[in-house]
Image (cartoon, rainbow, N blue to C red):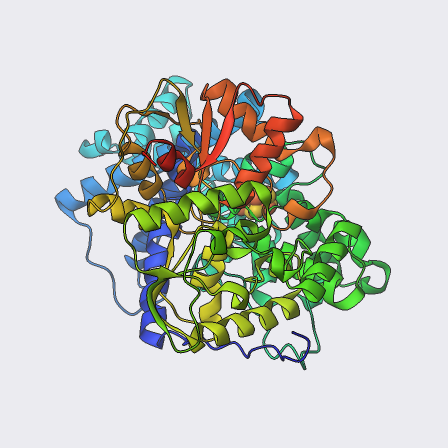
Length: 635
Ligand code: SF4
Ligand code: SF4
C-alpha cells in the first residue's frame, strides 16, 4: 500500500442551474416551511407561530410604507375596500400569532424546562423584543381605532380589544393624536432596534441559518468531504479556528443552541462528557474571540482550550444530530476536521486509535490480522473467486468484519447459503479484496483511506460485474457514497436490499413458521439514517410467517446508535457510558424482544458484547438478518 499514492478526488459538479433549483427548493422547504422545526410538535408550532407572525407583520409593514410615496415615486393602490378589511384582519392575526408563540416559548423555558434547553440572555432578549413590538403595534392600532372609530373596527379584533381596554381605563381622548404619534414612533424605534439587534443576538440565525440551509456542502448523505490533493495539501484538518472552511464557520455562527442535537446524541445520553451543542458552542466562542472580536486573542487560545482534546473522539458519527438540526448544521463535519488535525498533523491521538490506524497501515485492516485469516469459510463453501477479466452478475464484497470477526463470520456463512439457495450468480474477490478504509476515514486518517479507496477501485476495475453487494453497513456507505469522489461509480446494494429483492421475485422462500420469540429490528446508522434503507429489512423479516416483530421506541430515522461507528468499535469506552448497553436496554426493556436483528456487523459485534457483558446470553440474542432467514429454512 505504501507504494501507492492517494487518488485525486473526481466527482462531477452539478450544473449552476441544478444548484440554483436545489437552493430554491431547500430554502422554501426548510427555511420558509420549516419542515424540520415541525418534527417536534410543541416547539415546532411555537416557532412557526412566531416566524409566520413576523413574516405577516413584515410584509404588511412594507405594503403600508409603499402606500406613501416615501421611497418610490408611486403609491401602492392596494389594499382598498374589502381587501383592506382582509388586510387588517390578517395583520391583526399576525400579531396574535407572535404573542401566542412567545407565551408558548416562555412557558417552555420556565415551566416545561426540557433538560437540553439552556437559557441565555439573548433568548430572553429576543422574546421580550418581539413581545414589545407586538404590544406596541396593538396599542398604536387601538388608539387609532379610538380616534377614528371606523365602522370596520371589528375587522381588527385585537386592536379593537385594545381600543375598548383604553376606553375602559378612561384614556383621555383629547391627547389621542400625540399619544398615537408617540406609540407609532415607539413601535418604529423598537422595530429598528430589532433590525439593529440581528448581528449581535440569536436573531441572526434567520439570516445565517437560511444561508447555511442553502449553501451548506452538498455531499451525498453519509459521505465526508475529501481532502483534495492530499499529497501536497498544506492544511490537514483544523487545529485552529481559522483553519476551518468558511462553510463550517457559517455553521458555527448559525447554531441557535436549541439543543435538539444534544437531545438525540447517544454519547450525551450515555453520560459521556460530550455534546454536539457544546462542541459547536466552543467553536463559535473561539471564532468570536479569534476572528470577530477587535482584541485578537488568537495567540492565547490553544487547540486544547478550544474544544478539549478528547471531545472529537466521543462522537460515533451516528448522524442523528445532522438529521435533527432544523438549520442543517453538521457537527460531524467539525469532529472529522478536528480528528484529521490530530491524526495527520500532530499524531496526538488516543492509544487505541493509533493502534487501529497502525493495523490498517501495516496489515490493511483494523483487526490487524493477516490476510490469510480473511473469511476462511469462503473456500470451505466453494465460493467462486473472481479472477482479473472475469465476469459475475453480483460481486460480493464481504468487508473486514465478515472476514475477520468470529461472530460475523457466522453471518457471512448464512448469507452465502442464501445466495446459493436463490441461485444468484455471485463471486468474491478473495485475497484481492481490500478493506474499504471507512474506519481510517472516520478516525481522521484521510491519507490511508484514499490509498485504500484507490487500491479497491483498481481491483474493481480489473474484473467485470453488474453490481456490488455487501453485508457491511459501513462498507456499503463508503462504496456507494464515498468512492464516487475518487472515480469509483458502481451500483452498490446492501444485503438487506438484495434479500428483499430475492424474496419479492420468489427466488427465496421461507420454509418454516416462526416460533414465539419476539424480534425487533435495529436500524444501523449507516444503512438507515444515512441511506434510508428502512423498509427492505422489515420486508425480509415480514416474509417469515408468524414472525413476531416489534419496534423499539427509537427506530428508523431516529434509531439509537449501537455505539460502534466513527471508530468507536476500536476505542476504550468507560464501562459506565457504553452506548451499546443503552441500546440493549431498549431491546429488552422497551421492545421486550428476545432477538434483536441487525444488518451491520458493527451492530452485531457491539450488541453481542453488550449481551455478554450484561450476562443476558440466556435472555436475548443478536442476529444478522441473513441468520434469521436461514433459521427459518430447511438445510
Ligand atoms: S446544531 Fe442545530 S440542533 Fe444543535 S443546538 Fe445548534 S441549531 Fe440546535
Ligand atoms: S453524530 Fe451522533 S454521536 Fe456524533 S454528535 Fe451527532 S448525535 Fe452525537
